[in-house]
Image (tube, rainbow, N blue to C red; front, side, top):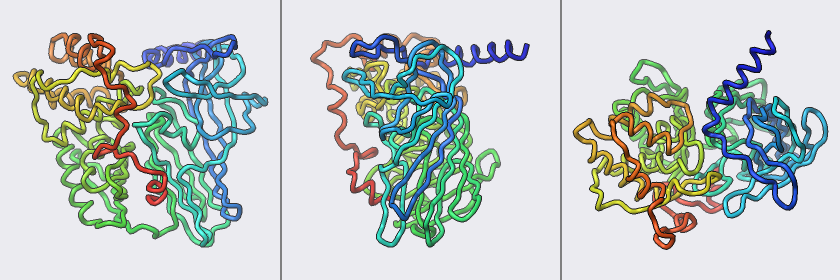
Length: 451
């Protein structure tokens, strides 16, 4: 009977997320069988900073469910070593999705069921060793490039999948103490020995992680009292003016809580990094002062309610940009036909048209439904209804239709999916990868300087 209940629970869990799983794909190159998107149940990572050899090593143990038979997919940009499936040596290979993305596939055919996957690899991205026997490291991410999330550093799944993560961090050979600033629950087990647990609703775009020698960057630590009376740790650190970041943060937090409800996360982390623009994480941001409000908005839309894929990322960028512009209304004459949500189902990055065309689209919806309370009122409802759940553009559209008792299919078709457009009328996704004032594309050297 216990086994039967376990099977039923497994079926129900998979069924509830079936809408978000991308379809299986051929392995290509004459190889038989389908590569299958899986459901991560948990991921345990051990990261060791070896100061003597100036290397960073990671060991990973992932438990996952195969929803159907085939070859399991995951992603990791660095080359994995010593890959094991249920304790047995296996191989993995890169699988190109033509003109869209790349992932890794385990070269072992599996029936549906639960499995474990182990591997080791070296982390090199955004790690800086100094001559003073020090190290700095961060998991800077990027939603405007393919493979720009956790997979840059650790094996992960795509954004549709939420799962509990735990990271053990050790700095070996250090002559000083280290600080780890992250948006998980930290337990310090010894000198430079940390254990961090992240919530089960986190996904590949959620984790904020920054390791540095203690005191390397000036910091404020205090409590923020939310509108519903909770005391949330507030950490602000920067080589800039901490007071200015604090003043703007408190003003923005008050505004967002009034508009959309209590701060949803267990921490507030703000790194005033500079270099223009910023990036959002769950309850955290690396940002300059001008972009701070935009990035904090993303803790409601992007890392509060969460896009399940690249075709859905336009919503949160449009929302934060609409807020930046004072929630301006737009007529339909101001709209531009796009395919922001009309790219491949395997699309992983956000179409940059969200900042302009997407923002105006939301402003038009606000105008269209102003007699019914407008879009801001809906977005509060949408946030409360879907907090910490993934969404698709299609489910966003369905909620709008239901809330306003309307049918927005024609508007979404032309301005979001691009179903009524001629091939020559659309600017391809790659054309939107130039710098924008909020999520400016930083160079590798600038990212290292942020450490």
